[in-house]
Image (cartoon, rainbow, N blue to C red; front, side, top):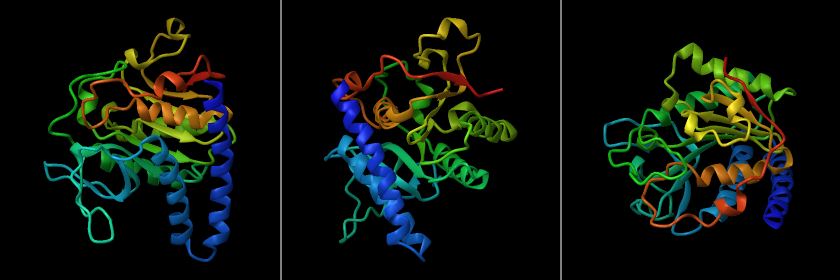
Length: 266
């Protein structure tokens, strides 16, 4: 839908501005800068996962004794218990009630920043849902639904995005990380999405027949429409509860085409 895409393009510009303002408003205190940026992303996501969803931050636990690092933006499903303190802050975040965990790393052109984010993602992907949703949509894999979805959001990557994509693939390759324990996708506002296709059935682009291998990491060049791709991809993750009808947004956000799709995995 053109109007929705146009609005999201404006949102992308506004987010860039908010991140720059955060550097001014929080000058001298890195934590304040981070807080301003987290709030900007949380407020954006909240518009597309409205109440009774809740958006918060913190560590996620599962029923098998594992716990993640603290994550900047956690999307709580309406089924999540209201485990909040007197100030409205969640004291416990439980894997079975989490739709997505989004970590904000503003500049992943820095290899150190990229690696920190991916390492935090490993702590999320070690979590397991005891009762995953069993009605799959959009080619989801059943096994993937046992894992809490993890996404990284950035404003910058290397001048050649493919170089960043190869760093992501190399990070997991060096650690021999199973595909289901890797991030679901990495977003760079205004540039595109690095997508982890863990099954050929998840690959949705028109050049599928020309690719001998449609699994692994690919770079989707969404350019100025990247926020539309971000929201679309968030909507299609394996959320924490079964839905008896489709979400409203995916049909409006599903792209007719994007500029290019390039494989970055070896």
